[in-house]
Each structure stands twice: as C-alpha cells, then as structure tokens.
Length: 128
Image (cartoon, rainbow, N blue to C red; front, side):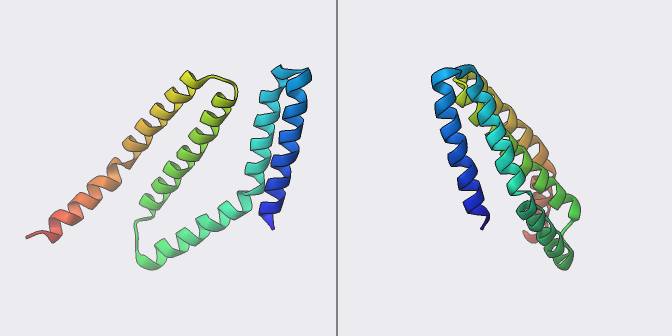
C-alpha cells in the first residue's frame, strides 16, 4: 500500500514544517522540498510500470513510439512544473510560480506541435 507510505511521509513532513515554522521558519522550505522529493521517489516504481504498459500498448497498436516518448516528456514537464509552482507558492513567491506556469505551458504547446500536425494530416486524409 504505497498510498499509506505517501500519506505517512506527508503527515510527518507536515508536523516537521509546523514545528520548524515556530522556531526556524527559514528552514521550512527545505523540509517541504525534501518531502516532495521523498514522495516522488516512492512513486517511481509505479511510474516505470505505467511507462512500460504504455510502450507495450504502443507496440501492439502500431502507434509511433516517437509520439509516445513526446507525450511522456510533456507529462513529465507538467508534473515538474506543478512541483516547482507548489514550492514557490509555499515560499510565498506567487509571481515566480505564475511565470513557471506560463513558461511550462508554452513549452508543452511547442512540444505538442508534431502530434497536432500529425492528427491534422490524418483528419485531412479522412475528409473527402
């Protein structure tokens, strides 16, 4: 039960952050980052299972594996950006968080152009 480990790490981290906030508030951001990294490492096995499942499905359905890799990169960028935005918001830096959101959205749109163009080509072939 991975979720129990994740919730346990989160609750222990929360207690540490609350205690640190009283005595050494400058260290709370480090505790928050460490908790996030620890939780991410707990789910890496699940993530690798998802990636292998998607690769198997792509191989069976003759989907271009380049697109699968691109979709995984886009998903990774979205997760990393959300992690960075959360850290910035925890630190009280909402302006930086919004810039990260905008930048990551632009990167995701730019990376998705090959998939969009491929879909448009398929649609054009289908239409009379």
